[in-house]
Every structure is written in structure tokens, then in C-alpha cells.
Amino acid sequence: MIEVRGRSKGQLRVIEAVLATIIIFTTFASAAYLLKSHRTWATRHLEELEKTGYNALQRLAESGGLEMTVGDSRPGWEVHLKLLLETILPASVYYNLTILASRYQNGIVTLEDYSQAITNVQSAGFINSPEIASVTYVYTCRNAKVYVLVLQLATGGEAQ
Amino acid sequence: MRSRRCRSGQFIVITALMIGIIALSTAIFLYETQVYQQHFRYRPYQDVTIDLENDVKRALACSLANATITYNGSWVPSGSWTSFGFDAGEGYAKQFLQQWRLTVINAFAGQGVNLVVNNVSEYIVNMTWAKPDSMSSANATLTVNMTTLGMFSWERNVTITLRVAVNMTSFKSSGANTNLTFRATEDIQYIVNDLPNTSVRLSFYNSSTSTWKNASVLFFDYMGNGVYAVTFTKTYVSGLRMMMWVKDRRNILVAAGFTLP
Image (tube, helix red, strand yellow):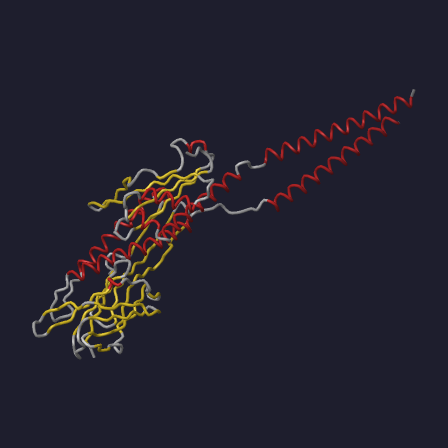
């Protein structure tokens, strides 16, 4: 009788130990999960998008792409610029390029819309994206006109 | 007695498990610090300053191109080589750089950009023309502060040049025509290798009528290392005064002046 009692007590202790282990492990796992920063990937991704944006505009400027499109402003230049952008940017990235022209009058500079936004997303496409990178670039053409290019990049949204 | 032993055994097991878990967690934590690379927060000041440095070069080249065209337009074709008006070109260059500066400040308004391009009293453009070795140049010092990005007193001195050096030993008579060679360099050290046929124009001074007349360019060829060969329609006459205008792809103009040896 005593032996049976002792056995059942021993089994109980083992079960308790297992339960304690499970509780402690769950606590640690939960703590680790809660302490982990879940936005790290998004922040890094935003930085990568910013770098991609600067690189793309820099390449367009250095290769003469901006001079041939924005600078010359021949009919259909927006289509050519869109093609150039799509060649440079990764296929999975959605972009929205706004071009502003600088106007100087009486010592004051105003920035005016130069064209419609050059984009591969619908107007609400960026809203669905968790991170949107925005890059500003100044470009002076040979015809003595100064433009400000604002390139927004995202990896979410809806493509057309 | 048995119950006590059982309890102490339980305590040992739990303690051992806890130590094991703590050790394992610490190990996992240390492993993660190795796996996930720690890095500083990205600030795009480098990209912004690269853009500003490149664009101030473009703005200066544009200013210089317009200044040289204005300067050349003020040339009075007479026997004198120095009858150019300088102020119009300089005034245009200063105004254009002011526009560029204000545009940059507006564009980067959210980043607290403060930009200074030269002192007001300093000259931006300079034309040393009417010599066998002539040059058009523009120089500006750019100082940038970006308060929100934590960057202060970033400074660059930018120089844009187009230099044309006529080889005074290269003149050769070829019947009713004359040959010469010249070397073109830009931005102090780089050779110019993309001048088109239409980029060169020549004039000679007719002392009997006291007027400048154009000479047609018959042959224009790139010889390499920035050297170009030109053949023009004028019989070689020693002591003849000539002017040669060269315009590069940026529309910067240089007028070299020389007397045939």
C-alpha cells in the first residue's frame, strides 16, 4: 500500500516538473516574442527603397536620360521616361514620379507641377503599402531650367 | 521522511530545468545578436550631397554657357580683340545660381537645408579669350548645412572650364586652304572628345577693309587625346589675325585669337 502511494507520488512529481517546465518555457518564449521588434524588416526595407530611389535618379541623370526626356520635353517624353524608370527599377517596386519646375520671379522661386505623375500604380495603390520611401532630386537641364523630381517607391499596392 | 526526499528531488529537477532554460535562452539571444546584423540608421545625406554637387556643376555649366554666349554677343567686330562686355554674362550667372539655390532650399525644406553659393562680391564666370590658349571658366563654392540630418558645413569648390589651345606650330598651307590643330580640355583635366563638325567657326581680319570675315571649315577631324585638326578656306598669310570659336556639348563657348606665324 505504501509502495503504491510512493509510486503515485513520484509520478505526480514528474507531472508537476513537466508542467513547471512547460510554464517556464512558455513564459520565456512569450517574453522573447514580445521583446522582438517586428518593424525591423520594414525599416530596413524603407532604407533599401530610399537607396534604390537615389540610385535610379542618379543613373538617369548621369546617363543623359533626364536630359533627353525632361530637358528636351519632346512629345511623348513622359512615356520614354516611364520606360527608362522601369528598366532601372526592380520589377517588384511600385513607383510614382512627380516633376516640379522651378519658376523664378522677382527674387522668389515657386515650384509648379510640370507634368502628370509618372507611375505604375493606381492612385490608391500606395495606401495599401506598409512603407513608402520618398526621394527628392534636383536636376538642372542644359536649357537653363531647374526641376525637382520627387520619386515615391513602395513594394505593396496594386499594379495596373 | 519519504515525502521530504520526494520534495527535495522535485526542487532539484525544477532548478535544473530552469537553469537549462535560462542557459538555452541566453544562447539563443547571443546567437541572434550574431545573426541579425546591427547597423546605424540610414540617413540620406550622402545621396543628397552627391546630387547637390553634381547639380551645381550642371547649373554652373549652364550659367557659363549663357554667360559666354552673352559675352560673345557683346563682341564688336573690329581690329581690337578686347572689345567684349563682361558684366552681362556675370550678372546672368549670378541670377541663375540664385534661382538654383532657392530651388534647392524649397525642394529640401523639410530637411532644414541651408545653402550658400559663393560670396556676393566674388566673380563666378571668367573668360580669357582672344589668345592662342583661351579658356572660359566658372567657379563656385557650395556650403551646405542640413540640420535634420545632422550634417553641418559640408563644402565643395566646383570649377567648370572649357579650354582651347591652338598649336601655333601646326599651321600648314595647303593651296588656297590652311590647316591647324588645337587641343580642347574641360573641367581642368579632362579631354574633350565629342566636338561635332559644327562646333568650330573661324574668322580672319581683313586689314584693307577693317572688317572680320568668316572662313569656311572644309575638314574637321578628331585626332585623339583631345586634339582636333581643322582645314579652312583661307590662303596662309603670315601675320594674319584670326579668331576661332569652339562650342562644346554643354554650349560653352571659347573664342581663341591668334596671328598666323
